Length: 433
Image (cartoon, one colour):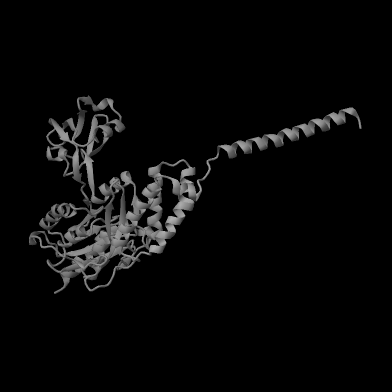
């Protein structure tokens, strides 16, 4: 064989050797750097291991005492085995903190133990727990002001009625020109929104031009906790028919509704639409409170029954007659209408008090309760299912509308359709001898 061929073959073999050697070295380094999963013996030797078990026991006990569905102690034991052999080693190998291991594992525990149909019960670490509680209760901490930037300043689009700025006279349409002596004209919208959402108890000086009087005014608005407005009137062109959008239920929904009902009743409204589409619900007591505007006082509304507890019945509250509405009513719902919104809709339908239009609701008529632990984490549990006064349980399939609509008819067209329906119904009643 010619000499140059031997040299070529030698070089090829050398390159192949170097390639294989490089792969071996890289793989060895990767294996050396990869975290080693602790064995079960190492897990149990961890000084924090008993603390984990103690915390999981508290979570289990909370579920066992309060969850609406019976738990299996053997399921808890299986989880502990899985935690020791799989969950803990994997999370530690990923470099997760002790708190993360504790809270993530507790979330796995709740998922393992809860009923298949339950999409609500869950474990929340401290920060998500605080955020959830704020959202579900409808509380907010800020100045309650939103708007948009214009060439003349920041024009207010909404002021929350229970915010301090509203109490001191700021109204929709006002033009804020200075915030804490800073001219708004030199600020971005992001900066303005930041200044309008300070920490709790902060005072913010606002200079603004009143939309009605055109006078320049100044107030010191306090950033405080308040309940957000949940009821809004939507414009309608059909005479004597009104539409109220209820975005969710909270402790102040009935108060919000009172103001609008007073206006509608003074105007002699003959048809009312309650738009509950996309309403995720809220406390069942909020649904009970707004039923007072439409159902006979002191009548049975619904009941819940927690584990090993007597029935917790809800009756219709008594309110002044001047706020009660006796006219025709349509309630709009969709698959995002859940919890208290479908509780209210289902009761109104069952009592023959309202026509339900739209899509089946979410099937979430449950009583949900929050249970907090010492580290400020929380487990949210379904503690009871909702029942009609006659004992029939609310279906997991949700409330079935009297008139079902496809997705193509679920926008503003549905409001127009409902308004026309009510107007025609009013005409028929008028024609009846």
